[in-house]
Length: 585
Image 1 (cartoon, rainbow, N blue to C red):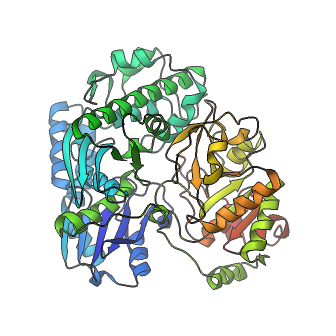
Image 2: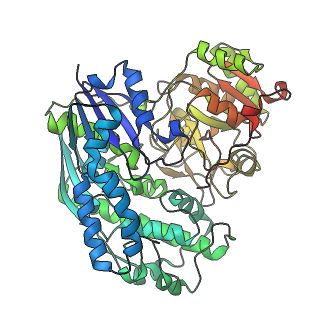
Image 3: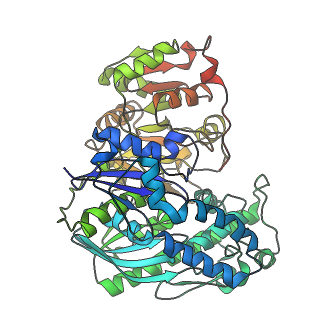
């Protein structure tokens, strides 16, 4: 047996992935266990889970692979500070503490913290992104593009994956980063950098792209080779205090929106404009990748690859790439997977076997719980529940959904990556126009403009979404003219971030939606992550109980155990009902 542990840590979204003979045994983000959103610490809890899932201890791990090369990154930071002295002094003072204490000593930290005594190697950041995408894809050969803020130095790369190797052909270096450009507009519109970028994407359809030319004239030039060249006088990310500066705001003649400020038409139009630029950039980059590789398949990764609207624009342009795979955990958490594969394929030079076409098991990689564990927890808190076999369960819950009840749905292994894909989900009826606002405000406790994704039976997807293709991971949007029928999951621009579901992907959820379809003639449910604003997605049954009793959800389903709020309104343990405050995203 050969075990390889991939680790991403010390920036944001720390995670761990364990391979056994080249197959993923388990993978998880640290935040799910620590309950700290985007936790950046060494993922000791996630590693502990992975080892437990494999029924081994750390002594059985043959190789640890870290997702980037710290000395290369430190060299870039020092060079940046030198160029911006004295303006970057505060940034230097803050950064040097973490680097001298931890980041320059990562092998020592890992060995001491994990009691590990074997080999540790390092991949490059974008190499890990590329590997995490290509080696989880169904392709033996493909083009690869990665786009994020910055790794060591690279911000955007084009590469090729073939057999058991990924090779970077072209890369663009910091500070000319499209990811940092998008983050700058995230901050300008009042959202948190490295957290609120998806909000900016969700806000865009409410506006019009009237500032697109203004952005291209002032902030960024996009070349035909897919390079984003920033006008650096408008940005301050190299000084560490902010992504934008006063000159940035002067272009728009408006200050940055305060986090709790009104989102008026102006900021909606700005969001729409940078989204339009993003879509153009990704299509230009993909076109150039096609030109220099000549391949028909594309793998994508990096935080910008989670922009599902841009991905949706790309996937319908079949003259560029016929096949597109986006790594479901495209952000930094997914580099733990890529790092592990770098160890297995590049370092150990193992032969690659192509995965089959049903890849959904690559996201159901977290913990699961047995009936006796769930029942022990429910007994501890004196929760009233009923136990139902799967046929009764799906019939009962589909009736609750038909009657406009909100369901907390906790099943099987937890998903890896940022999306809840039916195992740690909140489910709701999409047929009611007021459902979107109700779930946003009363359940999720977040901004009312935020969209919800529809999960649809794949065999009926094209009846509801135009030109809908396989989209197992909510990473593409498709147009729909069905707003009058499913208003709460069609966005302002008549698109939806679709999740298509096949029976073999998740048999129980497929049966539930099929039952709902028979009752309502609608093969679709709202599927949103099981958490409230600022909270990581629930990982264990106790997390689910807390979230259930602290929100207006009507029903909680833990495996086959059905818990009704109406049957549990008195004498609930204060530990479950005490409102927990999370740092807002």
